[in-house]
Image 1 (spheres, rainbow, N blue to C red):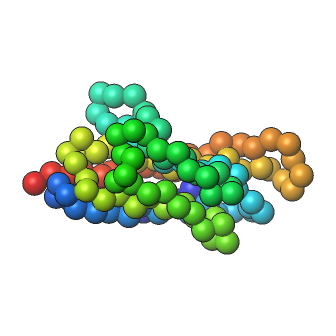
Image 2 (image 1 turned 120 degrees about the vertical axis):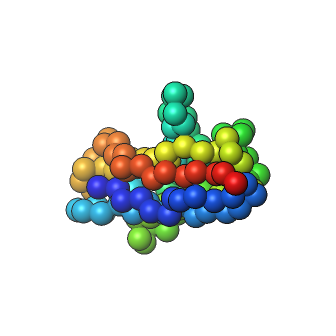
Length: 120
């Protein structure tokens, strides 16, 4: 399972750091990502990181957010700086986890979501 933490209320221009840890019988985690969903909107990809550390970002967060991971802890992070009211959403982590060593496929897991509210 994926367990997220770090959401909360922050003023515009502030920072937050989200964490998401994968637990259970895991020997490796492939790609990991953060998505977000604002009220009345579709879920959208915020940032993505491969097992090797290559990253991609949504245009709206590029230069403000940084995704990183600790493979030893099976954990992905999202450092969010210069937050704007439009960043307000529920943030979900996502991970591709192979069911066993050597499997040629992965299952996709989602976290429960953590609320980020940017408001003065």
